[in-house]
Length: 92
Length: 190
Image (cartoon, rainbow over all chains, first blue to last red; front, side):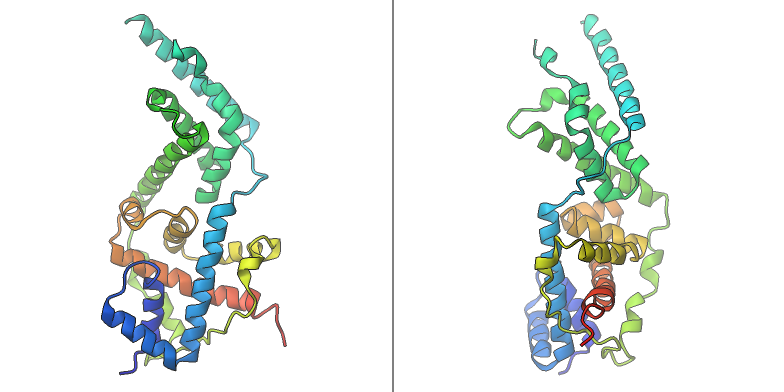
């Protein structure tokens, strides 16, 4: 039975999300063997996954920084919190 | 007393920018990212007795921040209609009535793994991500950039795992089309 490419595209994505059932694995494999476009799609999604794994492991833009304004307001909140804490400890 | 060694102001000096970048890469909003840094440092200060020192301070802070970010996303989603993006199927324009391809995926001969440090490629990828519908982008980035697992994402976004799979599928298809158009197709005119 020939499975529509639309269904196979979904299986392709799902194969990165969950364990496919045996039937689904068969459908996917058989269809890919017959269909060049779906092979291309499958290959490109796999490549995309590798790209994101790489990005996940290497990333974070190096140039973004907290603005001075944010830093000041955070510092203020931290100091307040510390004082509150110190006050509480006196009561012990 | 141990207390003397703990100085949250120095956490801000040493790790503030790193935490900010981390939050920004997840939330794409400077003000919210700065709020996340504050929330994280306050929570860290309140809970510093629990820091065992078996991970680095930065790892510990990032762990706290991950929870703060998920809390934030959860709140944001509660304030928004959740499922309207699931109602119509944006992938249908890529397929004919009988489920065959309308858009023809091409083979990506160029190896983009070697392109990951190529700024041009990263820019195109970024723009393709920005064009995803909001919800798709959110779950896709939680999954692919933050590396969150299914149950974390489902809880944060209040969706079922099936919904998650649908959204991931749509996002992948949209990105495949976008990258093919703007990178793999465009850079190779032969």
